[in-house]
Length: 175
Image (cartoon, rainbow, N blue to C red):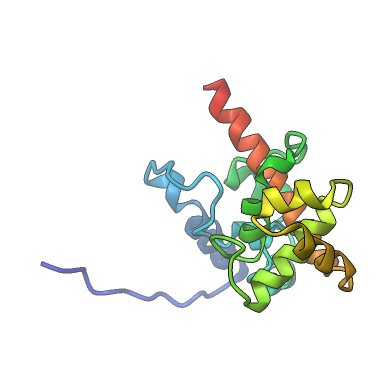
């Protein structure tokens, strides 16, 4: 059986681009899917600054679709601008998600960036507390603290992921 042949339609003006943009981002809702509440399979986290994989796409949207505002993207995601207060219990998952990883293991550039940002977000916590949350040793957290600060974009993305996760838990509890 297989798939139907793909049909491409060139984008012919800004109105068409905007329609296509919102059509693509709204496919999960259009098809009644609720299996990705954090929109990890979408570009929305990057556009909203809670993931750093494709932050450049936000600049393209701003350039080519200047009337698309943050509120529009938040509405598509189903997230509110004033999300619930973040809880650091989700710090490891939030930090990994902020750089597009499933966890903080490994020695990749992304994992190192995520761990540094997580330690920065959890700065008020002790090395022992952070070690337990992040699956690191106390000495490892101490070494990370001595490194240069994480990029603000990554730290902001981790904080954003924490807010999104807190709101997602609160929504689940309310239903």
